[in-house]
Structures are given as structure tokens and as C-alpha cells.
Image (tube, rainbow, N blue to C red; front, side, top):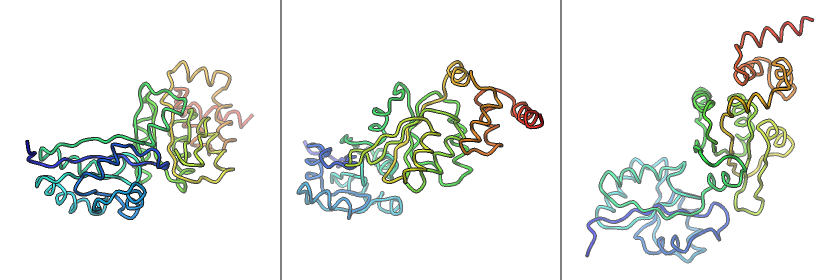
Length: 283
């Protein structure tokens, strides 16, 4: 029985350790007609390691509008195609999701070839709750959009997973702390590689750690969701609002942000916390 259309395979590749390449992934990449790769130079090294000689075509964020329909036309013509990202599962923080959508709209079979994934690897080793979680990936580029997104998720109880580059890590940790307050958090870097590291604590301790240790490698951040009211109160039961503000200021926050965070975490009007701080200063 012949197939009318080709198949699109979303094929996971290693995120660092080449031993995480699956037998199925190697076979699939050898059998398809062409491989659509985010970075053909990077993927060519992977193919060479596993003695795979399938032709490559580039498919990435900057050419997807043109290349996507071209690939779908080849699928409609009966060719099997594998899509790969530079690392991990295509479709997670890369344009593989757009190609899958185009294929599905044309009735083409889209098949996952699972494998390594940084978000899930960091989550299961974080020690934080895995019952309910959300993947938020890289934060938006503009400050306004970042604040809007973090504001929407600040009250959610599910664990959150983010991706971040080393040069943006400190700024992102500061923004997460400003939005979420004192939450437990884990920074996972260089997952599956020689210098894999998990730094566990809270957002403030991560800031302190990476102030001393220059961030290197790609990061996955795992942050606990909004604690239940009783849990939040238990954490701060020995601190008055003013003492809590002072603690945050000592940790590096400016007074305005500290007051806003304390008011949010303790469920108090911001003006009331501000007034308490002013009155203490006057005495």
C-alpha cells in the first residue's frame, strides 16, 4: 500500500551528550529524504558522528515563511522529512512548531521522535513540585512584555520553567524576583555536559551565587509557583512588614520594589507598608 503524502518527523537531538541520541532517531534521519535543520553546519557535525549522509536543508526563524511551504510541497509530493533543532526537541522554542502546523493543515502525518529535552531534565532534577508545571521558555525581548507575562503568572501555583542565556541570566533573575518575591528556584546549566550543575535555593540566593560565579553555559531556570497563603505566612511569620522590607533592601532591592513585593506577598495595601516604613524612619 503506497502512501499519498510523505511524513514529517519531529526528531529530538542531544542537548549536550551525544550518547542521548536514540537508535530510532539515527534510523529515522538515515531513512528520510531530507533533513530540515535549524543550523545546517551544526547538524552536519552530528550527522557525521553517526555516519548519516541524508541531504540537509536550512529551516529557521528567518527563512520559515519561504522554506515552510517549500517543505510542505515536498511532503505533499510523497517525500519523508525530518525536522531537527540545534539541540533537544524541535518545536520547543524554535520554528519547528510552525512547520508542524503547516503540515497538519494539509493533512500530513506528523510523527514525534522523542529524546533529550532541557526543560523536563531540569524540572525532574529540581526538587520542586512536578504535579503541575508550565513551560515559559525565553522571556519576551521588551521589558513591558516581560513584566506583563510575569505579572500574569505571579499568582499561579504551578512550577514554572524558563530558558535563559548566560549574558541575560542576572537581569532575568532580578526580574523574576521583582515579580515573584522570595520563591524557591533552581538554575540548571550545561545539562548533560561535562560541567553540568544544579544551583538550588531561592531567587535571592541564585542572584548572590552568580554574582560570585560568572554565569557560563545555557541555563534552564525552574521556579516554584505561588505558595498557598498559609505557606507564605509561615515563611514570613517572624518578620514584620518593615523588617521584611529592610531585608529585601539589604539584599539589593530598591525601597520602592521592596515595598511593592512585601505588600503583594503579605496581602497588604502598598500605602500601608510605605507608611510603616516612613514612620519607623522618623522615630
